[in-house]
Image (cartoon, rainbow, N blue to C red; front, side, top):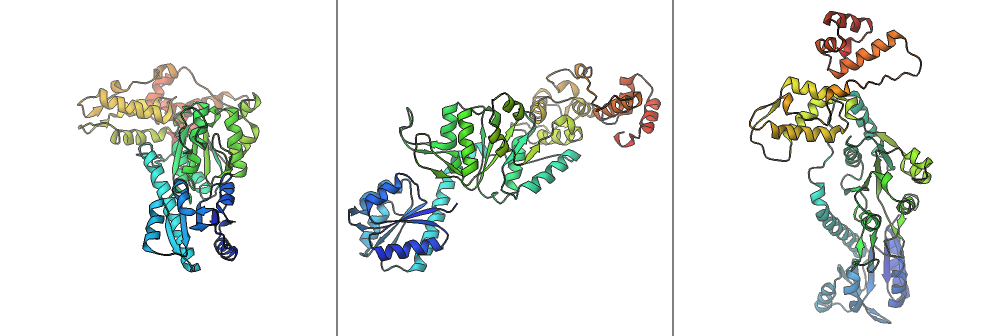
Length: 451
């Protein structure tokens, strides 16, 4: 959708010339012949730029400029060029100043420059507000496992296509990192990426944060506030835990996805959004649809492309690499260079990580503290949510048919080899057989790669 530019000029010929010329540059251009007509149009729309004559039949532009400049960049036109009038226009808030008769080439350059500067100022202000939340959060999808390689290939495939993406995965599995990776690999990479936690905001506050609000929209709304959708213009908006939003917000979000339009809370103007939405959830949205907790039409819009963030237990070979990363990049001071004892790493690989990567990060950082001045993190420094031995009694074998005893043995052996990183001695201990017997079973079931 092209940007709207309002031209306020009472000279019919000149107004038509300016409107036509700017429209030919690819902008949606609207003409008004007076402040009354301009005010009426502005009550329903918000242009990206106003080009206006100083002297109009019903007033002087400089009398209105200070109020307008709070919301819109403006270029002032006048046939009475002087240093004084130029200074007055700039002091009143004009972004630039052009003398009549106009040079169309100069008009084109000025329009482009003012729009670019306005965009830079808007992004600068927005980035300042988001800076603290953004620091240290560049996408860093670590791991060499097969599922991570496939995930990166999927991201590379979908990122350049400006399509809505739904990321599904357990809590702590790195869904936001996947969203950032999509943004970083897209054409929007140089624009803003903003993450919104849908769980942490109440409904009215969430609507105000997402869509913005008008002055007087609710108690305490003392001035207009632009929402995240406007602030992330041209970039990517990540909605984490999308399954938590209320039905009324679902309806408004659906409208944005379908039409590209939205309204601020308490507003009557239709505004446009050039934003890519990436959503994530750890809930079963299809089950929520069946229970009338989530809109089916919104789900189909969000799930134009689905990506699954794999849980950590399905990529155990990545655990040593991730553990080392968190060891070297923790957020608090530690003057001792540390490393993991082999037994500690084996224990981490064997653990099922119900909290996924977030839990791994927490446990590594806790282990750094508990190991004190020691240079080696040992098994006793690892504090898990639940005892590994307890987990070993809960085993799930999945088959789409009644398995034979031979199939059960092969599946169980593969699970134990993966769990203990191929250590036959440990597998033999768990199975209660000799290591030689384990080796023969591996060979019989063609599980040599797992060993």
